[in-house]
Amino acid sequence: MSTTTIGDIVRGDAEVFPPYLYEAYRSTIRRAPTCALVEVPLTLSELTGPGPVISAVTPDDADLTRNAGTGGEAMGQRIIVTGRVLDASGAPVKNTLVEVWQANAAGRYIHRRDQWPAPLDPNFLGIGRCHTNDRGEYRFLTIMPGAYPWRNHPNAWRPSHIHFSLFGNAWASRLVTQMYFAGDPLLPLDPIFNSSPTERARAAMIAAYAHDVTEPEWALGWRWDIVLDGPDAVAFEPERDQSRGQTPRAQPEGSDLLASDDFGVIPSERSESRDLHQ
Image 1 (cartoon, rainbow, N blue to C red):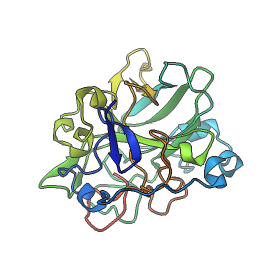
Image 2: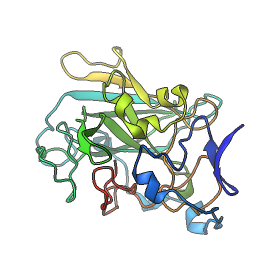
Image 3: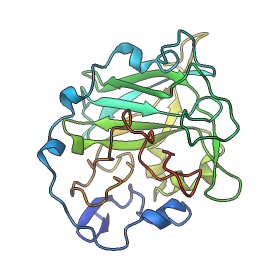
């Protein structure tokens, strides 16, 4: 199997994982390592948890249309996003913490550095979480996120997408990726999506419309299964500190997205000088 590596550190299957340097995605020019990585042994705190560090997950957490606590409902087209978390053999992965974050219907995040002229929604936080059940299933009620501009290249717009974070039984098992929507005309123009090296890898990040999930007069349904390993694996984002650990796929992304002051940990796509998750 061909792998994406720098020195002895293996990131993963080269047919699934994007290269560290993908020049069309300009932020990688600055942050891609230029020297061989040095393996740093994981600490006890990284090999255990998150456990009780994370507060109890409630059913309300998975309803992004109302979990802002304002008593109001988010604006936008309601959608149900559901699917299964699977291992390489296709077996369900149960009791996995799944966290999501996204822009609102106008394509704007609640973040002090997100100041492009699109309206904020006072009833939408843009974050949610749930645990997978015994069948490995997750389910969120949210709104269709809007596209938004970023400063990667002239007239650049990011396609509608939802960020996903999955936690196993240790901090070092955190995986982060993005889910896109079938038929989005911006997908062929997006260098982040197209940095995944093969058509198969890109297809694994696209949710399909699911009429059996759609609820009459309520919400459209989308289904997206997350495969953690093997030839059908979803491409996951690299960790910010590229010297931590040597696990091919279960690499830590960094600080907890719900506690992060930057609402994420990937260098920005909208500005060359800020840290706002794409």
